[in-house]
Length: 329
Image (cartoon, rainbow, N blue to C red; front, side, top):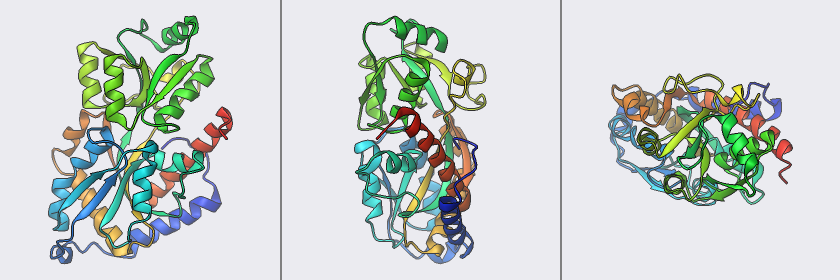
């Protein structure tokens, strides 16, 4: 969840009612699905190796057992996630194609005129899987150990500091620009196809900073001293970094939180959505799943279709406020 303002009745009512119907109108029929060997393809609009990708892959073995059919990931990066999203938007709603996405599913549709989809109309929530807080991360060459020191450092520079993002106007880009706006610093966003490429750029020093979810790769580099965490953007301290300051303690109101979940193209049967949602819930509750994603700094959080629809609405509220603040046209 992002903000706690009341959701818009026009959008949230439609989204929540549609999701509620999808979840409650059918009973999980895992036994009958066991005979269906059709491959379930999960399109992920980012490169392989990113945190959203890894969180999904960790759930696949258990899902395959529950569903009785193979589950594969099809990575389709590009345009901050829009390329892969459009593939699922145009897929047949026959239960064979799903989308694994994060808050950018909602954000891209509100920011990009060429996105070509409505997150609340063209997709049906299936299940929330994990919540993902963001972190302000810098390369070791940046002489700052706190967010306040980082702000002072940036203000002392004669040029913009290059900041890595996972795509133009994606979540990491918007987060960095909000930080710049609210602190008066100058950042130069450098977009990459996905989180994996952006991670490589930050580790190498090609860019000097990012506002991003964590990953096992980032964690290893933080432990090794090549990268440094300055602050978490969540509303409360994470179980993974309890001693790390919150960004809002230095920049009041700077709170950005996120979710990751599965979505189906509109028109997918309520029975299929219910079946997959139950399989996801079972998968992430299995012993070992929480430990597998702990290195990603992800908090396991199953959300039913109605709950995920509500999270989407709160995300939309956040993006609309950010668009006004940053004067994005």
